Image (cartoon, rainbow, N blue to C red):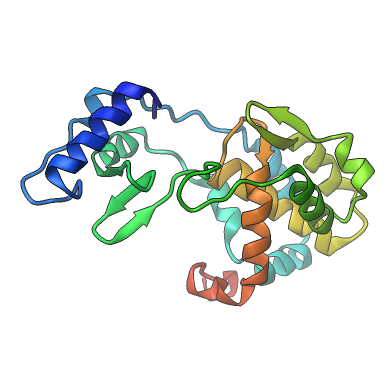
Length: 216
């Protein structure tokens, strides 16, 4: 969505006057002020890597991260995105459907996220990838206001990593960074490392959110 002062001012004022955007009788006009972009990362290389893995490797991935790879085949519905703009909640920077908040992306210093320092980004990438601080410093890039690591770097790491668990972790990180929470095309954002580590630490909760491959 196009982020400019006019939209924010109009949206916040409307919410102040009408309450929740889902209040009975209230019809949002936000789509009259916005531009919807459904530009996506090219996921072909991710698909090719997944297709080349053995069944044993895929089962190891499923046991850790559930059915994430199925997201590689999901097609974005631009009409759905346009329809959902009426549920934008400017107070929390997310979409609110009833009592459910949908967060389409991770934004630094916005709801559901916290700013990540360069040190934190490095430390967490070291834990995820198993690579040294020097190796990562040479490959981390600045994209706008945040630090990112290029997908090409992660792709090469997935292809050559000798540690199968780390290979799987980097592949899962790439799906979260390129598919679920994309920020800069072709890069995985620094905030994703925080989010990803939290998911790993709460991995016992995954069955509540993802259908296991073995259940299909």
